Length: 227
Image 1 (tube, rainbow, N blue to C red):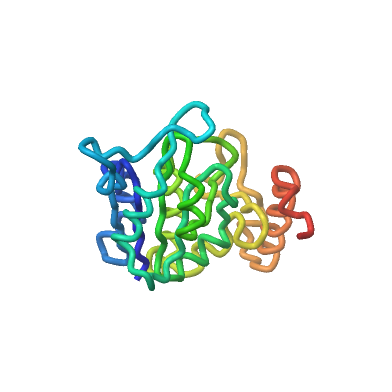
Image 2 (cartoon, one colour):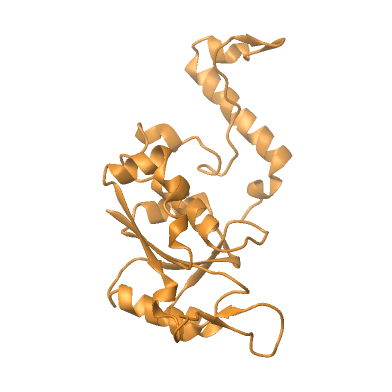
């Protein structure tokens, strides 16, 4: 079973959106498990401090290496096979391929950063892989963790109604998804493309492929570049 362990300073933010729709239904059915761990459990002193000023000066605060390491060590067995991820704007981009890879595994451990980030030494010492959901900065890693988990959970076998439900989606085949239509046949002078209504599956497949290629060229030409 896919098991997610989240280290956060705001455990009350979860499950949040992950408790609704597909992810929430799958959670209720026991298709995946969500555990939240408060980093502050291992805070220092009476006030359970988890952060300190940056070495070398500068604005903001940094999560302490000793505090986060203590939390990870206390909650994760040494042989835990799950990848250890740190949500960070400087991380590797989250991709559909990575989400599918993780969805088929035992789950993930996610550290949600806050403030100016996490002491580099604990990232190195505990083997945290930094993952980004985009070229922007959020207040913390919690929302980014929700994005990552939603991308994974929907791909867990049994969560979506049909195995092929996600096979034509954006990024699954290196292209953005083709346009979708449904009833009514006409809407404000715009009609469904006739090729989608003639029952010729070969022509429909060709139209969808060509449309996906066109949209990808227009909106994300970087996806068409040779690796």
